[in-house]
Amino acid sequence: MAFLREIRAERKSGKVYSYWVTIKTFWDKKKRKVRHKVLHDLGHLSDQEVRAIRTILSLKGMPEDSFFTSWQDIKTKKDYDFLAPIVLDKLWHLWELDKVTDSGQILKVPSSIISEILTINRAVAPASDLKVCSWYEETILPKLFKVTPEIVNPTRIYRSLDNIISKEERIQNHLSRKVKDLGYDDLSLVFYDITSSYFEGWGCPLGEFGLSRDYQKNKLQLLLALAVTKEGFPFYWKVLPGSLHDSLTVKEVATSLKKKFQLKDIILVMDKGMVSEDNLKFLEEQNFSYIVTIPRSQVKTLDDFPKELLENLGKELEEEGKRKTPNLPLNQWRAGLKRIMQKYLYFTYLLPRAYFHELKKEKERRYILCFNPEKFVEERKQRKKKISSISAYLEKWNKELTSARKSKDKKLLGKEIYSYLKKRKAENLFTIKLIPKRKRIKKRTITTYRIEHQIKQDKLENLKLSDGIYCILSNLPEEKAASFLLSAYRERRKVEVAFSYLKGFIEIRPFYHQKEERVKAHILFCILGYLLQVTVEYLLKKKGYPMTFQEFCKRTARVTAVELEIENIRKKGLKLTEVPKEVLSLLEMINSKDVLSKDFLKMEK
Image (cartoon, rainbow, N blue to C red):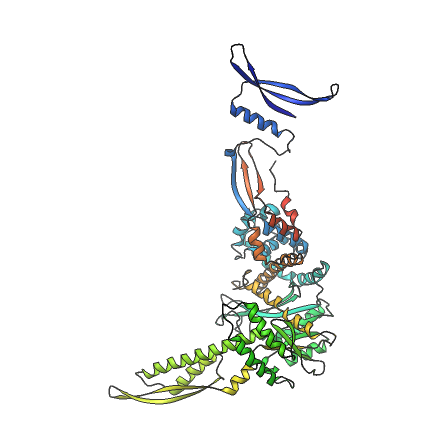
């Protein structure tokens, strides 16, 4: 190894001269020791020349891509969103979605690449189809796919939307097989639910007026039926007209699950909106196992409904509920509720918010009465607030009627009051009387009214019996414990979370497309985006590190790919910003550490 050394020599005159030489070390075999050999006599050097030569000598033995430059010659051109897109690309290929979304070339670009771009966009930064192009340019994906941003244009995107829908059934079949092949789920438990979304515009044939879960009842709606596994992986969906009732979708979904996916021993978990006697009979005839809930009003008609017990329990819990204040720690308050519940051996404890008791069986149907003491206290509290609010509003109305200067129409006033109570879902809770009042105003007599309201105590007591309860109905044999049925039903939240993600972060709504095929394609890409999100969350949870996909994106956003240009050697390349240890750990958990060593992350030759 060569190095630089300064030689200092003093003349007889006392003046000190210095010069620089390069020296090489070598092993002297004869004398058996390390010796130095002068390679070059460089003479006198300035400080700047010394630094430069030392830098050059230090490069010897360094990697091939080492070079000599200055701080001024290093230019940063642009940074790209890196980790989230490239991790999702890895998961896209893990699910082998490139194989099932391929339908040839779209204007000389593989259709699977356009599909992947649209899917990753939905997962990390949902945007309109037109804005996808500019988003794509800001990510590392053009370098990864070797497809320049100008090629990803609206024409290719719309072609992809038009083509992908013919692959929908194939994609669903693939997902149902792949989730088992990967060992992520066995499809023994399937959660099914339905939601609505709305259109901007009036041209799509799918759009019909119906129940809106988004409080957009004045806009055309469509329905999205979705089935997910117990780990939350979506594998079946169906887009339906917006006017259909939820329960009318069950037969079609059950038939598809059986025929399309050849699923035999599955348990279908649904909410009470899907329950009808016709549906239950159909599922039983088709040998489906199901776990559903029934309406609260129906629960109270069961033969062994514990009315007296719930009344007594309710009085004690209501008193305990008064102790709840912002200053009281939650665990202390819960301990108080638990002490009360322990006095009632009728219920079995599962969780602080879940107690249960199996009621009398009717043929093959089992009924599990469930009770949530915390929800009970909250519902009682909210009902009191609601009644107080309605009473205050009616009194305010009376003041306006007292100061009225024109006669009031009794029939019209009655309709207004009924409409208000119906809006507050209290039309059956109050008895309303309109007492006429006459008064003179400037030589004329007007008729107004006073509203007298009274709570129907029998209705109120009947409502109170519903507080905190729900009832699970299942045709599973008694080998499956009641606690299993309750736990399985509580897990239905997986499909509710899916809808929450689709409507929230992935922004499935509203729909601006007017062609039926493009609306369905838009939903397909949203669901595939959600699939990739769930995969990240599942892999992290499996390693004991539960985290939402949004939090994962937030933590990995610090790592970007920076385009550098070295002017003095006329070269450029991509370099990652420093990767924190925490991010490295996250990548290891999802088996994606290799994304940090992609071929394009180096100096161009």
